Amino acid sequence: GETHASAASFNNHWGVPLSLARCPATARFAIFEIGMNHAGEIEPLVKMVRPHVAVITAVEPVHLEFFAGIEAIADAKAEIFSGVEPGGAVVLNRDNSQFARLQRRASKLGISRIVSFGADEKSDARLLDVSLHAACSAVHANILGHDVTYKLGMPGRHMAMNSLAVLAAASLVAADLARAALSLSQIEPAAGRGVRRALEVANGEATLIDESYNANPASMAAALQVLGRTTVGPHGRRIAVLGDMLELGPASAALHRGLNEAIKANHIDLVYCCGPLMRNLWDALSPGKRGFYAESAAALEAQAVAAIRAGDTIMVKGSLGSKMKTIVNALERRFPGKAAHDEAAV
Image (tube, rainbow, N blue to C red; front, side):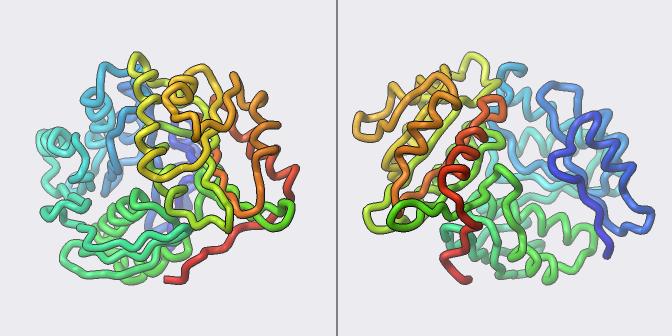
């Protein structure tokens, strides 16, 4: 049926009312994003939306500058339950450390339809198998008792997991599950969230992955995993250009250093860092993986541009406030290109 959705990340006290106001009276389905970085922000917004299905994809260590710990983040996200319509449902990540806490919160508020997703064998929407490719994935899942196999037009295990939540929600509102699964082959990354471009460089092409919109420890690890699975050309390298992850509070230094494990696990060849917080990662890197360090994205531009050669794949990521988009813009100015195509048909 006719479906309305938020334009971009319209998820705050301005964006949610605007998205509601734009919803046509004829829409059968409507999808709204609700975000927060402080406790108390979700409840007034969800009471405007009054969803029949509420989805929490994950609870991760983000915005720790404003929270006492991950449990407090879970409690803030659980505010979404307060606006669920009577008889409505919630969809929760069973693989997440905060699943039981969220489940208890939902039950306490009288929500009886609690649907889980994940790889855990007890999940209602369960990942059975996934074949990961550089720009897409093939997913086999069981969604509320129905086996489905589908192509997902975005890479990464994390996106495959999110697709389970999407299909669970679709099933809960009596949408056509087969058509919903088929449509996932057509999805594309939003701007700054994994868009790929082929860059025309000397003697060939390089690939740019633009992840510059935002970053936290979980999304950094996911992006590095995607980079690690990318096939590079002859003599090509997997290059990460990373800016600060903001709002992480006292744990910030350790969380930045901790990215080194994902860099090693995913065989990233070269790392460029910028920002005072990302200095913690730079200091932890082995000398052979160090590209260049600068205090800001603007100061790193020239070094990042000069590093690129044919066959390379370069991924640029950082919090919005770290201004990593300036490096993406510099690369695109220097090396005109085109949208990169999937390397695998599924």
